Image (tube, rainbow, N blue to C red; front, side, top):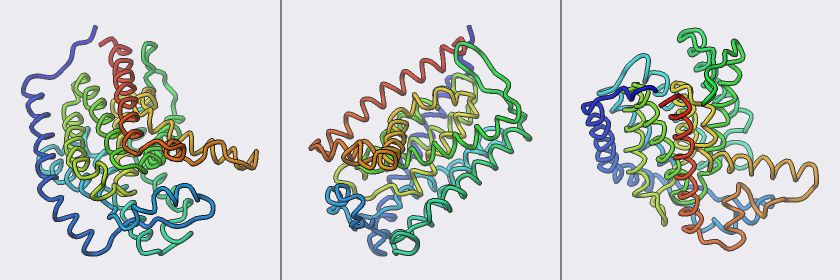
Length: 337
């Protein structure tokens, strides 16, 4: 049986940095929201004949500022650079967070201003290639610089997969980014699931003695909690691609750094079903020429059948908490914790 490799001082640092992140994010949120409202950086709800149910359900949210994710990744980046910059542990997740955050911010701005394809924003192909590029840099670094070439399967051990490590890494990170983005459609939903997921991976990192990585997770979690304070229904602002895509791809990097990518779909179960429901809906339309769900991803289906937004979010949080605990238990005990 392996012992947990952290001290009381490490725990104090973890909670201190988490609390500091929350406090700083809370302090500068009014400045950010004032800037977003003043410059009319509000979400555009387009009336689309292909998504009439979504447009009808969310038209009242049009104009609410988006790009709130900037609060999370800027706060995390600043505190990490000052208190927790460590080559082996935090360089890669910090790179993923900031680079993906910038890409998302550009996409959000294009969407708000109505610049680009389909009324505003980047083309899907361009977004896919940009985030795949970020993932490819990470895959190269893991394989060639860090020498990682195996995947840990809880209860069974490490399996060497050689060069296959790189395409698996890229696919996993792109999936993490886009599936988590699908959940960013209801007030508080994505933020709550992200907070639970980062908490789970922070505990995994602590159990492995990866203190700096755990501190990074705590920093993100603190900023997320501050964001949630203003994002719970009725939301003061939305996360936007600059938040959801960046947090998703960064969480994927952390999953690989802790060699626990196998439990990622369990810990992030809500993101998994959100992403799958979107893909299944697209498949159903192409093959059967009709919808399987009234609207997708799945949380919009529940809206369409009459569930209140708060009810969906709360129940998804409960499911997300349960799945995070299950995934955490598998990760810990599967390594002989």
